[in-house]
Length: 289
Image (cartoon, rainbow, N blue to C red):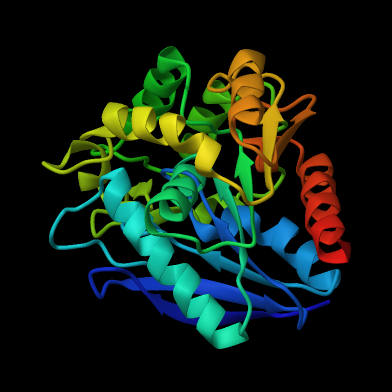
C-alpha cells in the first residue's frame, strides 16, 4: 500500500494550500473537492490511482480543511480558478508533466474555469457531477444544508452524523465516525463545526458573487475545451440532470459522460467503487493512447 505524504502548495494570493501525495511514480492527477468538503473525500480513490502507477495529489481548497482562510475574503469562482491554475503549474514543475484534474462540484468548476481562462494547463479533466448549467433547486438545497448549522455547530459527532443521515438518506450510515471527524473542527466551546471558512458562503466576496455570469461564460466557452474530458454523473443527482449532461458532451469537443447508479451529487462517497473504476478507466485509457 502506498503511503500518503503531506505536501504544501501555494495559492494565487500566497495562501497556503494543504495537500497529500500518493506517489505511484507516474502521471500526476490532482483531486479537488467540492464546496464544504476537504481533501480527505478522495482518500480511497487517490490510493487506487497511485496503486495503478500514477501520482495522486489531493488538495484542500482555500478556506477548507487545513488550507488558509484567506484574509481578503476572496471566495468567488474566479479566485478558486486562479488557485487551481497556480496548483497545476506547481505540480507540472515538480513532476515535469502536464497533470490531469479530477474535480467535484466547486473543484470541477474551478478546474474548468482555470483551463478555459488561464490555460492550456491540463492533460485531461474529470468533472464529478458538475456542469456549468445546474439545477438551481439543487444548488439551494446543498447551500441550505451547509448553512444550517454553520454558526451553532454540533454538540457531538453523533449529532453531526444525524444531520448528514437526514440530508443523505440513501447513503448507509458508517459504523465509525472517525471519517466524519476529519471534516469537522472542534472549537474552544467544545462544539464541532464544519471545516471551512463561513465567509465562503456569507462573506462580501462569497462563492455566489458573480456565479451566474461565470457559469454563462463557461457554458459559452465549452466549444473551446479541446482536452479529453469525462463527466461522471450520479444518476440520482439533485444538481445535474441527463439533459445537462448531454448538453455538456455536445458542446465540449472531446467530452464523454458516464452515469453512476445509486449515487446522488456526492458520487465518490455514495458509490466509491464504481466511481473509482470509471475514473481509472478514463485515466489509464488516456495514458495508453
